[in-house]
Amino acid sequence: MTTTDTAAAGALPGVVKPTSAEVMEDTGTGLDFGTRADRMPGHLTPNDRFFVRSHSPTPRIDAEEWSLRIDGDAVGSPVTFGYDDLWRAFPLVSVTRTIECAGNRRVLFGQQHGQRIAGTPWGRGAVSTAEWTGVRLRDLLEAAGVTADAHDVMPVALDECGARRPMPLDKAMADDTLLALAMNGEPLPPDHGFPARVVVSGWLGAASIKWVGRIEVSRRPIHVPWNTEDYVLIGPDHPAHGPVLGTPINELPVTSLVELDWPAHLKPEPQLVRGRSFAGEQRIASVAYSIDRGPWHEARLTGSREAGAWTRWHFDWHPAPGDHTISIRATDDTGRTQPSHVPWNRLGYLNNQILEHPVRVAAEASA
Image 1 (spheres, one colour):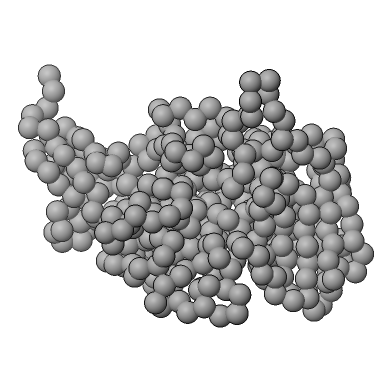
Image 2 (image 1 turned 120 degrees about the horizontal axis):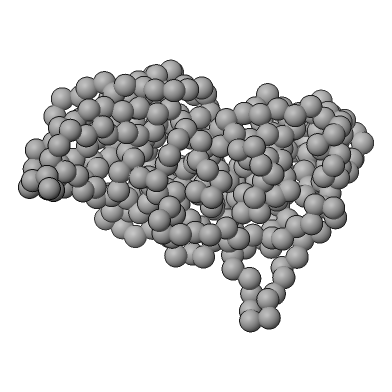
């Protein structure tokens, strides 16, 4: 089903697609690459620029040999599907959804708290958006005869570590929870889950398991390292309970991204500052900006404002020479807004505080 092929000169690289510094940020792990904020050309992130987060090297999977098994003690009739079965036997749906790693902005979180934090050293690039096409997970579960007392649904990956993370039945049965087969109109690239991956709308990226080969449906809560030790808020405000070391992360908070380098370098001339804000399962309602900790002004929202996907915005600025900061504060349609401070947690997750984006403006415009 999967191969961990070894080339004559040694192991294959952990990521298949090119990861040029022109468009991607290398975290140094060999597996994880962020999307450069100043290299986002449209609402959708092109496949070659979509961020990569993996726990093991990208597996090479032959679709003709691959199959998906749905089983567990909350399944009436375990079933197995081939790749062609998924394309032909079920309705296909498409949704545009943003995926963000819960550890995005971890390096900045560490700097804010004066500590170095273990984990992938993400800057701001572990977030991207695509149109995903596939089969509703609900349709597959119903075909397997999921029982009324089902509690958790857990996709399991075919990578070396068997990445897996359960979700409650109601989230698995949601209209926009997919087993995706295509990304931005093309079959899934290897690094993004070929031949099939789960897309769990509005939740942390770790829930959207790639390279799925099995889905377990259980009558009881499922505990695995991905929801007891990792992807858990651990700290004074998050006491352990049972095997879980803190508060498991599911839905993502409101966040924002300025489409500039960090730090940015601009000319002293009129600028159109662009960015994106994301509110997990909710919609972005408004975005405000502040220059040099001054008054807040409304940015102009553009394009789509659907739940589960980022919203683009911009504002005009004519900066004077010198050093400046840009601060962004987004609010969603339930009233959640970005805070000025995020309390400490050991693994540096969910850093959605208002950031002061550093900008240096040249003394004079270039000829």
